[in-house]
Image 1 (cartoon, rainbow, N blue to C red):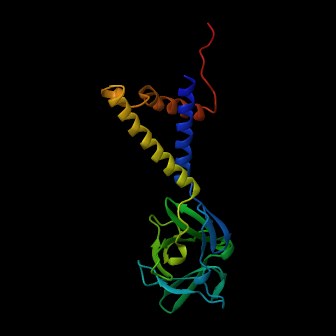
Image 2 (image 1 turned 90 degrees about the vertical axis):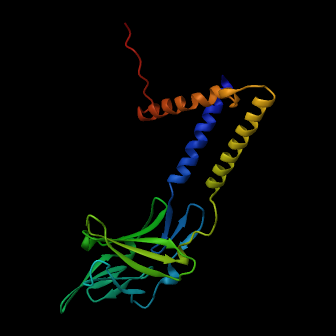
Length: 243
């Protein structure tokens, strides 16, 4: 029974660790244009940046209308008419009238993951209604290609972009957590395979009993269910009132 309990605890802990390793991806900000991934690789957009006060990417046309265009420069601030010391500028062309609206500063840059997609987001305190989000897509054949994806739907003032570049590729390989999870799954598969062979050819079992430690694996979902209830209930256990 003690072995069973420890076995269940070990499996549950490893499953939780593997799940958290997959789900809780992050990239720790190191500068306005760089972050450190969980696997220890530095994503650095500095090779794409201009340092002369002008945007590296200008006149990026909105796919939903020729009246909107954007400018962006990683790392270093730029000035474009009414956009002073910004990271992202929204250009609105309406006949002879040109408007330049700042939608992000360098110090506001934040790195995060949307699923497996790494993003960098910008905002501007003077224009809180709008912000820019750039999806960083690994493409080892491209130096740096920025395209506008237009506003999100329904419109919330968030302007979406996609940057394809070799500088956003995480080339450091698997993280330690990923290696441990792969090792765990491999050992678990080997354990089950050898166990089934032993049950069939040595112990002469059949049916469900060919699964090694059958009772243990059947009870695992119950333990997970009880553990989930325990966590949700913050450790409180219901008891019957004394009669």
